[in-house]
Length: 284
Ligand SMILES: Cc1cc2nc3c(=O)[nH]c(=O)nc-3n(C[C@H](O)[C@H](O)[C@H](O)COP(=O)(O)OP(=O)(O)OC[C@H]3O[C@@H](n4cnc5c(N)ncnc54)[C@H](O)[C@@H]3O)c2cc1C
View 1 (tube, rainbow, N blue to C red):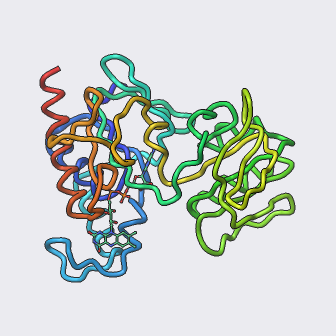
View 2 (view 1 turned 45 degrees about the vertical axis):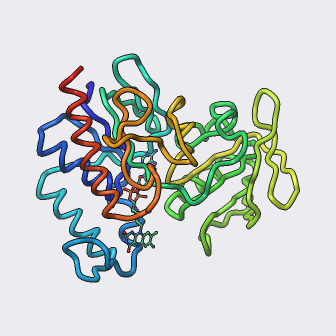
């Protein structure tokens, strides 16, 4: 099915975009986490969001979820690994699944873990964002896993069941993932090395590891890898006042467009992006 719009990311910006597309009866797919962004539920106290007096993040999350349920809005639980321009629409790869939409609203937030030098260059040549999709290629081999969030540990566990050795780099405290063939490290990978394919990983302590593959399991994917050709400014998506990005039919909202990183800004931009996407659809 060719959707009118694909929204990527289920933080406040995505919530706002989805509510507006639903009201305007657009055929849209919304891809992200069903229980919404961790950055909503993790806030201890929110004092600057209109309509809520010192709410906890959990309370705001619940209010968003209730509203989505009341409006019958569904989330497709997945991570979009890559987006490809197809002329008059875009194709999205999300794990093993494939979606198509005329317009996009990127609400991907900002990643705390950052990218690794060479990551985009070696994507598909040893770098992967999906253990389920590509894990089978590394049976009996050595892989490194950058794990940005505890909720991806099950993917690392799956890889440990296939690979001979796994170098594991958790970007959070007290990882709960242990196996005989797993070496966990507090060092940070800074560069991918190799010739035609990934052959190694340089760490911030100066050491080099020989690896056959690198799995980056994070909450967000580097923008230039997600959608090649998308213009950025200081690591954020460059947008105009309509929240239009540099590619036709692509809009962006929330933290991914720049500071301040705030719920109210994200929600406002999600609203504008949805209306701009609707206008774009009417004009094509
Ligand atoms: C602990 C904490 C407390 C905070 N307190 C406040 C506060 O009091 N007031 C305030 O205004 N702000 C606060 N913030 C900031 C606020 O959380 C962010 O500004 C807001 O969540 C940004 O919303 P967003 O929709 O742009 O992105 P996010 O909330 O970051 O959501 C982006 C979502 O997109 C998903 N995603 C990214 N890439 C992909 C992909 N390729 N495929 C599928 N999904 C993808 C991510 O996993 C994530 O779920 C706080 C943040 C934290 C961490």
